[in-house]
Image (cartoon, rainbow over all chains, first blue to last red; front, side, top):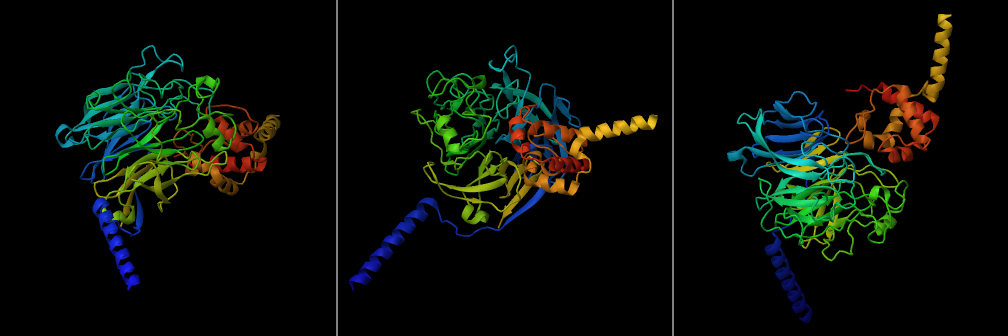
Length: 432
Length: 106
């Protein structure tokens, strides 16, 4: 009798717990979805970002060419090209590409049906002024443009540069991957708040991420005219457009269904990270020389130290030059770090819809990954079950897709995931 | 006399190109598939900030790989290439050059 009573009590507690869980988070599927991968476009040159309208109209950028749109019937219109590009309806002679830099991210205005606006991030010579003579000047060389698309989707007009002062690396430096144009971030996206969020990179300059006035190494939250969001809460003295600071190279940003915003950040030779952002928070990246126990560094940038020319055990690098330095009281700790490795997190989005089964609501991240110095290659899409509090993950799995350098991942209006690769493809990845 | 010069030129060129002469393209393709493709893309098409190699002449590929193998910096990604070229044998360089030069550049 006591055993039966005990069993009944246990069952009741379990039922209550289950009900409470389901009531709070919704019923969780245990189905592992069947994944299919189909190429939508091939033969592109470094497609960097994709954004879709509800009818499947797909805008995409190519890093050294420009922005184009693929219509639902498959027709492609080359809209706005870069310097020396051809075949585009119009072009910006100030837009250029070099190494990692070029025409990168894009976003569609939530009110596109009325205002026809898209937003494109690119390297530009327009605002260099006298500030690009050396690597140790501000060099405003990354911008965000607002463009208006014609009704027939064959041209754009009324370019307005809404952000003109994201810094750019003008010259090669004494670092691994040391070419000019390094670390631009440049992934714009709209949040559920209707604001435009812009990610940037440290452009290989030590002072950038912790600087209150330089826009390199930041996440910005602005309106579509480029003005700061009124609720941004950066530290005193910071530019009011700053939502978070202390970043290295944020190439991915996405919003979970509860509104929480996460970044995917590319580590140096250690520790790619996924981080839940906090308004005014610090990502903890500070590659300045002569701080944090470090001395002088090559070209005043400690980002690849120590012994930057050779393989070093990642834990030693991480201790010397942490991605998330705990000496900052306003540090946003990562939800995930890549087991000490840097394999190149390209972008992030959240899987939406019942068709994704047990992966519904989880984060999908492109891991680009080159293999050297003992680090295995990336070339995969990973799916993360991030805990509600954003401080850790429950699990990570590899999505069964081809091994590619997945630069971008974007949820489509049809419930499919669109993934663009550095190899030149845009894939549609479906689940059922 | 003309043919003598041509013969000497061919000999010198062969010497400079070193082990590339007679490289095995199939073996080069297999070696390329070990890790080169991760940066330079399938069939040497190039991607991201890593250059296109498809269709480059044999002497070009051989010269670059031998330079990197010797530890000489010749560009912003030299540290990566030096690390990857150091273990290559003459035969592997010849094979890689034979393969990459045979791939159409478009």
